[in-house]
Image (cartoon, rainbow, N blue to C red; front, side, top):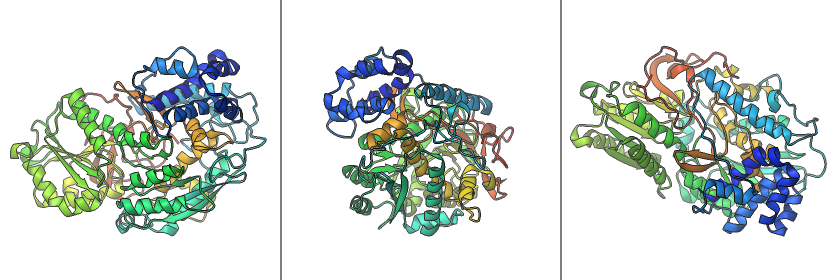
Length: 611
């Protein structure tokens, strides 16, 4: 179990055990002997609730000598908890899986109610600077209730500490905002129905920041955005590090940055960490090790590849491997399934450990071995070598061709890869893994439709809702009634969700440590058919303990239909099995996939049933 895992386990158990069982004064006494006096003096400035969790995090950093993660695997979960709280240990509880949309909604409601109830006990002052709704959850007005709203807070008064960290001032927080000028990314965005310009994205970002400042607590500080346009391609580590250098050199300094280059994020984030700069929306589909090495400075959208590969291995092992390839074509149809993996990596091999984890998970838990693995490097690697990759897949499994190709890569690669597969008469199934944006309708329409008609699998996303009725659209219109956000707007929204959640819960003395402590006590949110579940902090999964720095926990089952229409009446859409029912890790059923069965499935909703 990693050191920071135990730290955040202790932090969360302080909410659930220390305050509940002993009371705040006794909790302080329990932990005091384990902390240096200098840290206790520091903690006194931070107030009773955030202070103890923060002190534990700071103590971890002091022991490790860095802000990264040090592992101490000689301690059990219980021993670690006792060490940092002085209380008897409690086991982490694995999250059960919802089996239907109704159960998913009920589960999310129960989790939110329980967590919000414990948070509420910590505060005695009923007046709030933000409006409290049901179960002490932040109420965001009559236009739209934000689906991932966290707990509301007591009314803030007094000194916010002024300059508590670089880029944090008494009246503002300076934040850089990163925009990619990579022509491949811009072109794909336009092709997928987005605006694809700096001006549009800047408008979306500023509008969403304004919306969050209207409802979320920022303790008397406004957010000042500093735009940074990329100097190179998204997959260029040198350009990414240079851009991070520019951000580090901003004067006045910034607290953090919203967004990152997609493929070269590791080089970018590493430089930001060196400068002590937080990064939000950074590290898409990178392995868990990346989050741990960058902790607590990098917070990602979607799941880490490690978390996602747990879902993918379970889906392949339980739902596909025991059954014949009934969605393949020609001579491959109904043969026993054999699998190959096509996956994205960069020149530094930052994504490789996630693939290694996937292979291990497949073999050890489900007895499945990949017949072929094809690594392509950066988007260009797929575009240049797509024909060669198809040849290799056809020659796999002793020249018989695999029946099922698992794709875990970027959203642009399948454009050329499926084109080449069709030219060479490929007949296999395509197994969707929910890798970034490949499971969106906008990109699905760009893939070869004959090939992609055999595509199905898992997704972190949720069924589309008609734009005008979806939360991201209504949030924008609330602030700009005369504007109309396009398809990339919800992508732009991702980093601010993480940033404002942590700031809201960090307390007035904003710093990386208090931000992390705030995220650790955020109530779980979502988990319904159109809203994925978000939670942060420690997770014990399959005998391993992780500390989650990324968004989304659950996944759903999808398949592609070239003739279906989405809620905005555009042709070509993903179907969602059982109306978009979502499953937690190790909660997938072992029955055959329901892909290509429209009974109970949906391509989306005119109006979301759960927003």
